[in-house]
Amino acid sequence: MERATYHHGDLAAALLAAGLELLEAEGADRLSLRALARAAGVSPNAPYRHYADKEDLLAALAAHGYADVRARLAGVTGDTVRDRLVATVQEGVRFALARPQVFRLMAGHICSTHPAVRTAMAELQATVGRTLGEPLLPGALALTQGLSTLLIDGSARPGAGESVDAFVERAVRGVADVS
Amino acid sequence: MERATYHHGDLAAALLAAGLELLEAEGADRLSLRALARAAGVSPNAPYRHYADKEDLLAALAAHGYADVRARLAGVTGDTVRDRLVATVQEGVRFALARPQVFRLMAGHICSTHPAVRTAMAELQATVGRTLGEPLLPGALALTQGLSTLLIDGSARPGAGESVDAFVERAVRGVADVS
DNA sequence: GCGGGTAAGTATGCAGTGCACACATTGCCG
DNA sequence: CGGCAATGTGTGCACTGCATACTTACCCGC
Image (tube, rainbow over all chains, first blue to last red; front, side):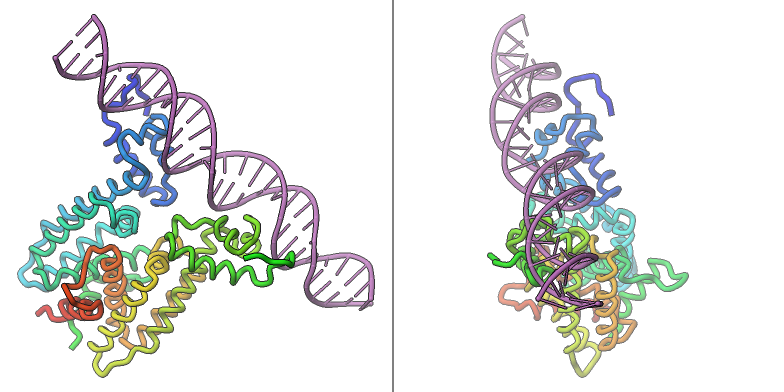
């Protein structure tokens, strides 16, 4: 990441990109602003011109993640509500397993108060609400969030030879079938 | 936290207690070993005699938390499976809202690999499995985990004048009633 | 009871962090 | 083309986790 000009050009975006990479490589708490600056080939304090503080940058990364899941979830379809519920949770869990550190960041406390993240989360909820309906919203989000966490931590595992999707479907149906 | 003797007496436990307090006061990532040592009236490096590193101490705090929820969940009863499901999630969410930082720590990545935490989690699962049955286990844990996170972050809120318990019941029934 | 080994605590120091502040560079706009 | 605001740099501070070397005093066998 060398550069000839004094000014970087688009440091804000470069930091986001490097952030996503380093984040997934070593987790949110091991991530340092200085390492990010290093990756972007810039002095340790340069990031402060674009992000108020570390939390602000992490929030931007999280918001980016929310936008991604939202895009994925917007495409979910299905004939019955139940089908759409299962498909939504499956899609969310797939995202979480593909980028666990980003997922954890999104679920973490840092972001919950940050305005950018709040609106990103609100938009996600609006999207999911449209495909599932209001009454199902909290449960669907909770199932997605919870199953993702369990799977990432290894606290729950698909059965031998069972795909993640199948596991998710089984878990959701397990709840949906209590009489 | 003064002391007259050179040796503390029960520093390991004192650190845990101070840890629980400071943890809830400022969150897991703001928690420093040095502050803990200060609270216990002991030199900055004393904790290392009892915990291998910071992660080890955090894991102990998390394991403590797991034991607590387990004790609470062991007392859950109900006539139907559905009743027990709702009651279990309600109890779990109550714990999370009462000690949000401990809950976050438990859900965080630090602990997922630590043996003490893994066994604590396994015991929790065994307990819940006994009152709900295996097929419901993942879903119930996921709902508890997810609803807790949503409520702590403020991403979901009970309706006006609605209690947390009522909200949880509504969310769970929302999922359990899809046809 | 007492001497020594060892568990438990202290002192010192290092690399790394987030961030504040003062300074340097340069693209842009009148 | 001149100046100014945006963007980047340098220096420095308080703090952190942790390694290493040292000190204290509890406890156990004789």
